[in-house]
Every structure is written in structure tokens, then in C-alpha cells.
Length: 132
Image (cartoon, rainbow, N blue to C red):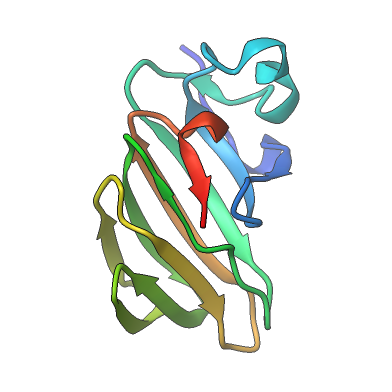
């Protein structure tokens, strides 16, 4: 059995501009770059799990995923999230479900990093991400 360790996960930047450390994800479909952005993550078939961080004053690019449904679970910090035409304040302990095809964006409005766990099904891929 392999155990994924957040402390061992190498950070990379996704197309939306957030910095993530992937714990588990589907490596197939990423071509020869698969190992370059999550070399220590556990290989999955249907989903991915990563910790994402948005620095104070930072924001992600507005984007959507063609196929992936996402779940964001906020573990630290505070900010604002846009989901479709709605916006809401978010903070540690909050959870948001993002349906496929729904534009979304995060702003860190606090003084500490906005940190969240992001689960995607099917697994995250750059090819499924559309920056708007």
C-alpha cells in the first residue's frame, strides 16, 4: 500500500493560477508531462484530490471544467467565491460543490493564505479546464 503525504507533494500551478499539491490523481491522459506535475501523487482511476492555496490578495482565473464536478472544502483563511452568477463569502469549514460546466473563481480577501481541499471527478486535467 502506498500512502500519500501532503508534506511530500510537490506544488505546481494549475491553469486557473492556483498553487496545488496533488495527493491523488489520474496520471493517464497527461502525456509525457504526467510525472512532471504530480510525481508523488497516488494514481487514481476516477477522481483526484489536491490541496490548493491562494495567497493573501490573490485570486484564481475565472474558469470551468467541461466534465469534472468539483468539491471545495476550505481548511484555512477566508475569501470570496463566485459560482455561476452567485457570489458568497467562504472560510475554513465551508464546502462548495461546483457542477461541470459552471464558471467559478476564488479571491483571497483575508490576511492569511486561503487553503482548500479540491476533489475532482473525473480527475483534474488541464485539457478539461477552460479559462474564461
